[in-house]
Amino acid sequence: MQIEIRGLRKVYPGGVTALDGIDLTIPPGVFGLLGPNGSGKTTLMRILATLLEPSAGEAYVDGHDVRHDKAAIRRMLGYMPQEFGFYPSLTVYETLDYFGLLCRINDPSERRSRVEQSLGRANLDEVAGRRVSTLSGGMKQRLGIAQALLNDPSVLIVDEPTAGLDPEERMRLRNLLVELAAGRIVILSTHIVSDISVTAERLAILDRGRVLFAGPVAELLAPLEGRTWIIDIGEEELGQIREQYFVTGVFRSATGMQVRVIADEMADSRGYSAAPTLDDAYVTTMKQEARLDDVA
Image 1: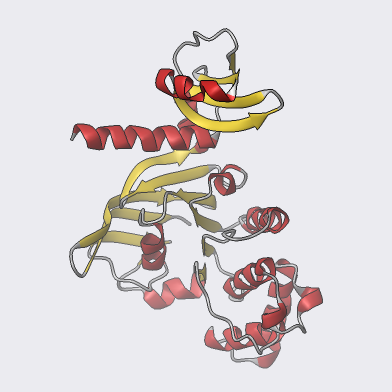
Image 2: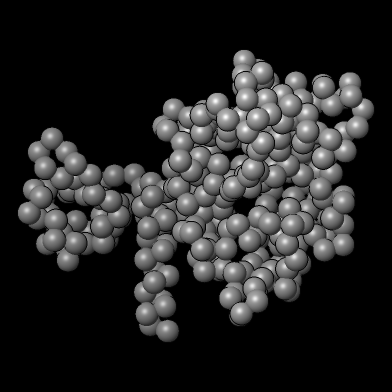
């Protein structure tokens, strides 16, 4: 079970290029798609979900062509889009029952079993009788996951699932995605770096429809080993530090500010070595791409 993408392009009417020759191999487990808004993540997700036709290139889900084998892919796919609409007057159970009918689970006893299983997986059993209009943002996100699990998919695609959630709900949803990844492909598309860092072992970074990096998280971090530093500074020094070093993060500290920088050597005596984070690697990758564009 894997997803193969070769030379995938999508050009919208008017000449807007959303995907510009994407090559990716996505294995089982949580695979992160990371990039800013407008990078092409949602377009890629919609093509894999057979909701959008590519302009060129190929994409195969477990050997099934996204152009010609839509029915086969949809039978193995669960999809949680970035924006989804639920009928606010329906209860949580009624909503899932309705989506079960849309999934062509026509046998009432089988549909009931699938709904109850999805409720349990998404930790929604206790609110099954509540109307959707009364749910918190986090519960609605979990309902989105539950409807994507109704057909027990071998491929689960979730687009920006933690956007707008409070920290506790975000943690719960991340944990759920990790649990669901056992024995299936989970594609997590987000612009929130921390969502990827705590869930995925492999990722791709997209920007303006192009893949800047694809591979294990450890491989992305490796070039920054021994080159990541932390310096404790006063607020008035930030401008000077930015001129001297490439800064990947700025944080408040008890004495003023703490900055994370990337440098081959540390000239400031206050600086000390730190393990690189995915935030450091992501910011560095995006900065390098911007420099290449400036040169071009």
